[in-house]
Image 1 (spheres, rainbow, N blue to C red):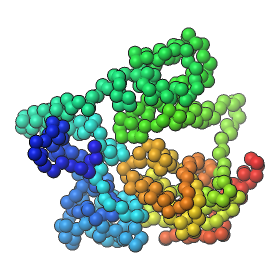
Image 2 (tube, helix red, strand yellow):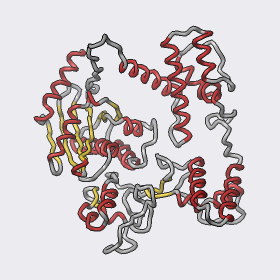
Image 3 (cartoon, rainbow, N blue to C red):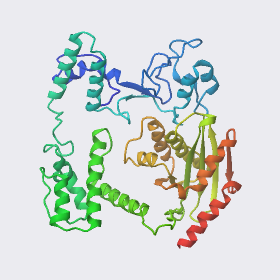
Amino acid sequence: MNPGSVPASMGNNPSYTWRSLMAAQNLVKEGLRWRMGNGASIHVWEDRWLPVLSTYKVTSPRMFLQADTLVQELINEDTTEWKSSVIDALFLPHEADIIKSIPINSRLPPDKLIWTETRNGLFTVRSAYHLARTRSASNSRGTSSDNSTLKRFWKMIWSIPVIQEDICESCREATETVGHVLWSCPKAKEVWECSKLVIGWNGGTNQTFQDLMWELLINGDAGEDKVAYAVTIAWALWHNWNEVRYGGVRKSGQQISSWASDYLREYRAAIVQVAPGVPVARQVIPWSPPQNGQFKINVDGAVFSEQKAVGVGVVIRDDKGRLEAALRRKISAPMGAVEAEAKAFEAGLLFTKDVRVRDVILDGDSLVVYNALCNFSPPPSSIASVVQGIIDISGDFRSVRYSHIRRQGNVPAHILAKHAFGIADYLAWIEEDPCCIMQALIHDVTSISTEQ
């Protein structure tokens, strides 16, 4: 269901499902708020649009602006930034900080209604049920007719044929037991087939995780590596099943098995045992160059809490590791870490577009932003608009590929982001190495030569 489409009227001869949804209209409205795009549809004082869990509304006293003032009047459309001085003058300090912490999509898309009861802003029946229960508890001292109406509504909702809580949401063919989710569901079978694991049993609907362990350890006498891989796959299956239930993206069998394999490899590398007293050497994943004819954009964000600002670092290099351009920028907004990272990805693409590079790899160390851009998982609602803007900007290039790298391989961009602390706006370099990252650039190029 799209939370933006709230039923307006019953209509003539409404269906049973439509009557059920109409009964929940007030509940649905209570669970909605605006996600800021260009602010043209949002009234500053009347609408629910602030990312705060209480009312989502502005509580500062209205002193100067009209009652119908729109949020777009608080945005500088030329710079796609908040009018900080105006906001500071009109709102209470804590509310001004909340407003300025909302990241703005540089393309200023239309505003959008989102669901407040899930992290990604997508509507689910389960979250609506939770909201209804909470609402019912808070109104328990009200009239009994309100509660009976609410109970009648949920009885109608759960009786709708298309919503069956005990039926597997993946295949719609069997009861959603643990055994079905992990073994007998066609989606689960696809994952196990992709894993190439040979397990001498037929996992059925009534089989449990303990049954799998018994088969591997007692009947099969499987080695440690095989058991560990099987356990990780089962965990990844269960994790993705929960993600889908709460609005996430269903991964393919190949994606889940590959993710489990990579996760297990990284875990083993992190717990390498050495002799007592011998320091553990950290696994360093160096920067890698793009293919011939391409450019790699490394980006990073940094939070300056004391300045109520964030820093952005951008480094653009060719297939030889030579610097094409670099940028460090300060954004005067009290954003959080994930918001700063999202704005860094956006700034990297916009800067690269100005440099007129056409074939790029966008590389950053934020797994949340990377997964959202690749559609592996939905973004948090706080950065959903910015992520969509990044995807839209990507269409202006001949080719764009998204990549994730650990912090060790993203040092130059990280240094630039940190150094934005001491500037007022931005500094850019074109075919010139910034002094502060020169050693880091040399180190990255040396690492390439060593590996080759």
